[in-house]
Length: 349
Image (tube, rainbow, N blue to C red; front, side, top):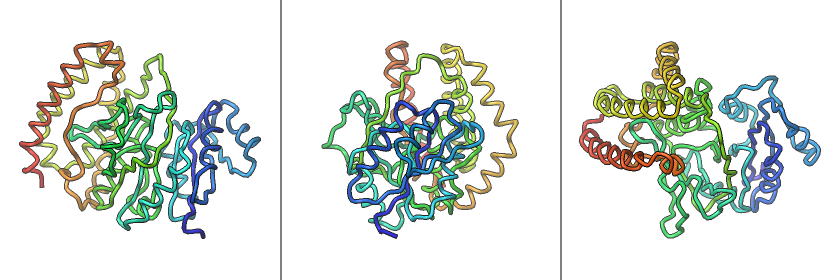
């Protein structure tokens, strides 16, 4: 098998408007040999037929029902792939011709590298960052510090990464840590938790700024209430399974403050019942997080203080424009959380 061979898996659901562009851009990739497979989550539009019509050589695997969980399809990719490296992507990206080769070159440079993720820019504003590397704040929130900023090549560098569903994966390591967790809802953490598990197992997950793609900017006019449930549940499942007992105890005051902020915010947005539902699911599914905690702690080689960080919290600019008080609330909370992290970090085993 070619040393530059990558199996590409596109996760598709109702991607008729974008998936053909995604495929076309991947086929323009330089210095790599690729084989594309589409994993379709039982689309209700004509995207599977469009793919078969325009790219008959591509295998389109359609699930028998809509799972609403990207991790189920990601695990299917890990299961059916045969190559050393696989690239998993969504159906709404336009890839630079050098994106895959840049990721492949980086991942091959060190045997401890498990994943490499590209820089993503807005499709309609290619100078603006959609995401450029992700870190997980110790309160259990994913932070991409460059999001919505103009990309600056002068400060771009390869850094540790802990999130994103678009990435090149060393399949062996992904399988070793158990793949993607299908207990997570499609919301915050469904992909990031996988990266955190790899990091805690002693592997490297990297953000590679020289590899980039354009990401569709989906304008959502209505509140996606199911994501509120998933985001709340996923965050607690992550904290309770990954964090050491000392960290959970030390961070309890911060968790309490953060939850008060969350409760006020969801009340304003009219999704408080969904927030409560997400919290109650943890109690209902306590056996799930107990089993997961046992599995994560078993593979854990890296301390929480090495896998987590503290920094400024992220809130979408549109929300800050709508609720002006958020700007000052977030700045105040970020400063306090940063100070508190400095206090407790030396105490974390």
